Length: 327
Image (cartoon, rainbow, N blue to C red; front, top):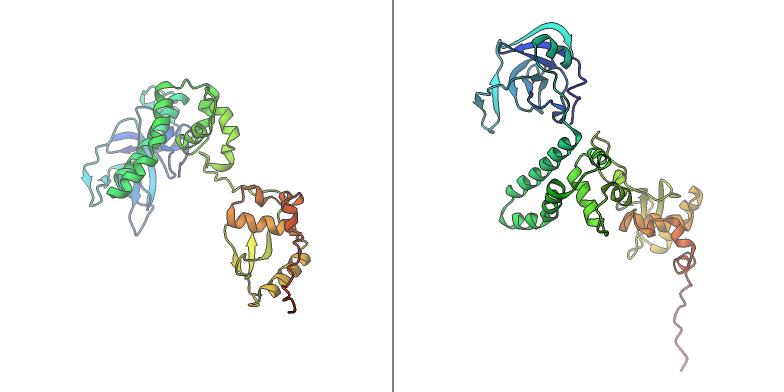
């Protein structure tokens, strides 16, 4: 949950422990907090989550607001989980209505903080992503730790290259900042790159990044599904002949209530149901393949079955029963 832009939010004017500050009922995106400023969350109690009782660095449950301050707070207590906090008591006072960050700075004589440069923001987010992965490794047991350490080597290499060697263009910076995890996307670009130059914008298009990776605004891409497929279709399970129902874009299948226990009758039932739904044989084959192998594979496209050798799957040769010769 990223929250609101600290520069654009309309706040309430407050004093917290006798120091001026800004309060909002919502959450503030920590990546938009001005350099040299401090952001804390307020926690409400279980009986009244909206009544602030403690100040903490970040709150998920019983969030009662967020404060933005020009000076750091001393969080003088620690709970059993290691979370640092400070009891509010009578320390929070609301003053004279709504106020913006710029108005607050003007009123209290602070210099209005310029936004962090996009380049610095990107380098910061790349570092945060790398730290998260290293922390994940440190929390695993010895065997898992070894496997995980091998898995993040590419991330370490890409992070080093981006921070120490790569000369970012403005377009590359803007493009990577659009993603929730710029390091993950940059690593995918690195792995797919085959040329001497590492043009990130070009690689983002080649790997179809916006369709495969979550964006910074919280948008989660829908899985790729080829055109020309129905919402659902019927088929029979290869090997067993069981009657199944397949839904477009989903992995696996659903058992059908029309299961007969006979493979041939199930095939007839699937053909009849698909015909009534207007579903062609290429569509059924593509749906079956997509659900079993993946919707981004060629077999999930019904056009695949229009030409040999796959077109033979539409009209397989009948099997002849073996006849014993008369002696």
